[in-house]
Image (cartoon, rainbow, N blue to C red; front, side, top):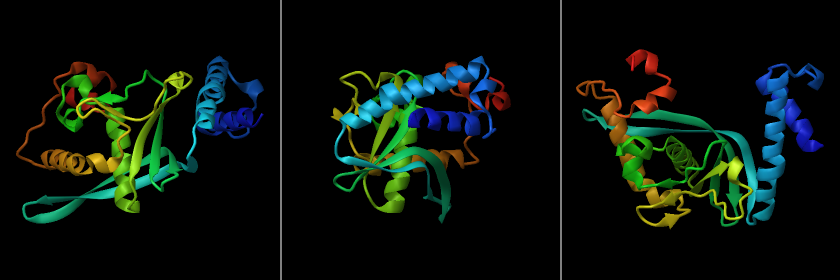
Length: 222
């Protein structure tokens, strides 16, 4: 009952934007959303969490932010990063785990740090980059290590499911942020320096499939 009530409340407030809506007013698509979300929670997320040990949920929908220092023309400026982490857990050893929920097919493998920034097409996995950025923000603002994790809810009822990142370059599964921090932040600064360099012209990405989901495809007219 608690899950059902929470889902209905969330659907009303976030989906319908009407806290006073009743289920009798739901159309077919809203009923489908309600039932799918409830199924994900009851059959996937809660059973998986119940099977794990050594953690406590610390915050939900947590705003995280950090200003990355960037040196340019002899001056040090900063570029602000901010986001909303779906969930932050506190692990038994004091480290954090930053969790992002996903509903698509699982993509937890990546071919090393370089591939996330310089790789071809699908190697540049935005889901993995996102959770690493959240881990960076937590590490730099709270001074504790963070484990990036992706909860692909449709796969969480599999007995072998793991939400941790799988680095195929190093062979490390479940590496925490400090393992990647130096190289990751170097690549972030390099990318920012290129974005803010007026001598670097705008260029379209080589993989046109990416443009189907890009917020800026109208601007570049791909």
